[in-house]
Image (cartoon, rainbow, N blue to C red; front, side, top):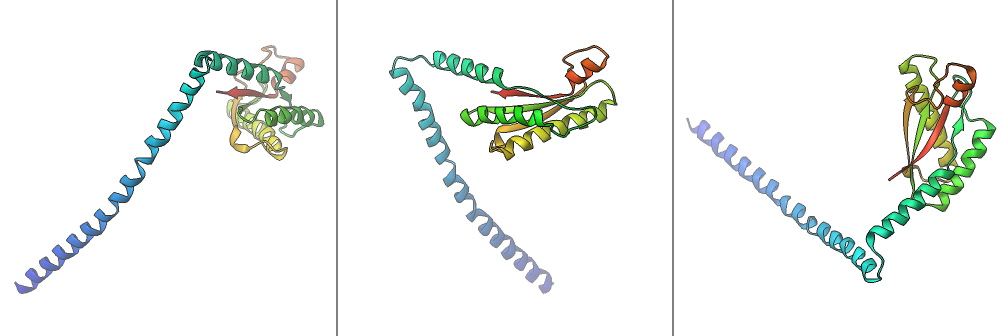
Length: 182
């Protein structure tokens, strides 16, 4: 009987000490939370400075969108040989030009889309399209473009440029395209 009472007291003391130790950590979390709204207020004040200068926010956004479209139209697609994801010398030259555009516009984020022709299974073409997009991304990174600005996706055979079933159409469809992400 006494052993049971002693064990209950030990359990109560252990439980109370765990609660005290666990509660000490909560104030540290609440201290960091007020810092985030302060940063939000500073960011919210910046657009008002633009409004004070007489330039409307919508005009600035329209101009930025037009600039993005202009740069996006200069990004060239690259093509691949049948069942390949290695970069040809011509593709490397195009990627070098694309890298120069991306370095000149560091605010741009790009999605690299890998595509295939209709030959092969859906699964195989999705995997091949991904390898093509990754090959293009890796080469751009080797040329000095930050990797966090580049994302990849594979569409496989789902989005052909030319729907015909001949060698010329298949050659057009084996590609990687570069799209500006907003």
